[in-house]
Image 1 (cartoon, rainbow, N blue to C red):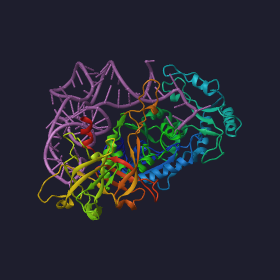
Image 2 (cartoon, rainbow, N blue to C red):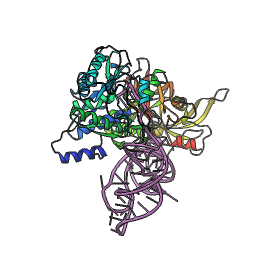
Image 3 (tube, chains in turn yellow, orange):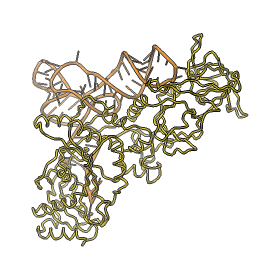
Image 4 (cartoon, rainbow, N blue to C red):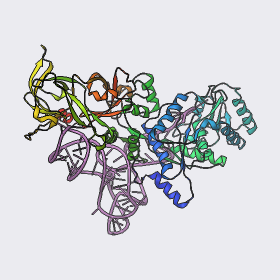
Length: 558
RNA sequence: UGGGGAGUAGUCUAGUGGUAGGACACAUGACUCUGGAUCAUGGCGCGGGGGUUCGAGUCCUCCCUCCCCAGCCA
């Protein structure tokens, strides 16, 4: 399960200190996604942090959708986000909120600011506003509409709401300081006119609040004590503080942390959307995606993702976690849980010459050596079997321990066999192997104590069932897919071999009842889970992760 | 060049003036009916220079590098 050791990170340090100064303090966080895409592993970090904080300090965590932009948001995303958070194991109780719930309140707040002379309606175009804003090094210019009277602003703002103006013709702006070195303070836009229907409020509104105007007040309304967010909002904090102070309402404490980056993938919703829309992947839940739904379909468990999030830590320095670490976490999880089975991805037929023609045997196999309670099962053995093509070499290098002419190896839980003949077609491709077996080694041990250097997985040709395996690899070939040469873009770094489909795998018959979501370790190959694409006619497996493979390393170093 | 952040092995992360620790990765070895798992061992790591101090990753100072900000996105 999750690491129960007391976690130490700078956010928890801050909260502990606050708690020391105010023992009665209740902590209240929130996870505030925008419903414009599916959640990814970076969101999982934030979810684990926000809900985890609430759990650790006996507080509460809200789910709030920051749905202020009707041009990008859809209820499909709302649904997927809720599903993913639940699946991860977190519960927001009845506290499911929407920024759009606060539109009326926000409007009142805006009116208040107008009355205080702290906000004004501006008729400048988007382009003009940009020009007036100045640059990083030069101050901005004040809008010619900056000094309209409160009465005029009130009337104009009401008319904006009433739909008297076309999109983009007017905005409401905060009146702060056009020469501020912090560009966020240069009279930021609070409302824009958008004649677009909203996934929740329908056509009730034609003006929509910006995120900057909405977010802090929403946290305040919900009585959030700690507004945890990512680093890029650090220089928005003075703006949020300004709004809260002008309004004189509850002031949450904002704390920023570094967002998660992972090697060999991208974590931007915009890019993930593009991969989906342009069919570089099958969907948001394509098992190659770093989305929660993709990882779920890939075979990751919620525990593994939570463990990952708790072990990567929380800090303020930009960081990119090695994908190998994620793989380590899922192997650690699945090693304990997954039933072992035998399946052959690329079959090579073996005929055991001295095994009686019509004989069949049932051999006993251990379901999970890591879990004695998992018990054993029977697997059928017969004269003709399949082994993995990679487990045979006609002319092996010295470090290759598996089957080769004249060499004896063990078939897992079965017998020692020795290769005595290779049958090839006229092109020299190996068609099948002839072997002999030693009947005295039944079960896998030789009574004379002789050893073999390798144990191979296998299936009985007459008993096995056919299956499809989808072998996934890194989505991108570059550790940082965003790093591109010349006029390339991140899609040029896509790994052309990120998915390999093998439709003629041979798997042991016990798998005939496998159901979508079930996870297995195919011995010596990796962890596989049953995909929802599975039908009565065909079982489809997704490879969640390979096993660590010493031979693969040796092979590439030869 | 303005503002805001950040620099501890290849990566992530502890450390709060007293021997720089953990995890992943890597390497080597042991063990093994999964070349899995497990166990053991290993490594020119505190961005740099000055300073304070008996003692600095930690305090002061100067410098360097990286990230974010000029959406009516979030």
